[in-house]
Length: 165
Image (cartoon, rainbow, N blue to C red; front, top):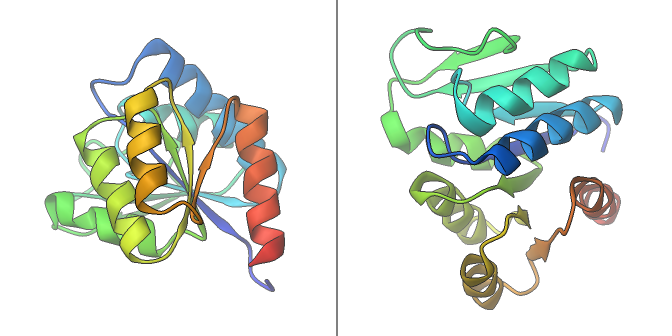
């Protein structure tokens, strides 16, 4: 791959757990350290905010795909804000613009992004504590769904997927 890899970190907004937020921050930080570009939903809440802040702490480049028709609510850690005026339909842009999707935590929006990624034959790394969601998505796409047991595991899996693409 000649261009910088874009790694999408998807996860809950307001419903993100403390563990989700800690993982997302570390993911953003390590993604930036790898020289990859971070892509999130761009808002200043939940996994989006934590991952973007982590990437900025490591001087990384961040892209936020926003749901509204302006930059209201954008994370201060987003370098490039893409205004879509598409609401949840922006999830397809999130997925299609990412070389690898890391799902950090679980919620309805995250589940829709994982489903869109599966339909688009994208690789998805699941980093969450929800055994049912892991089992469900892995059964849907056993060749494209990877289970990470830690943030460092997610980064290793991402690196392996990028090398083998």
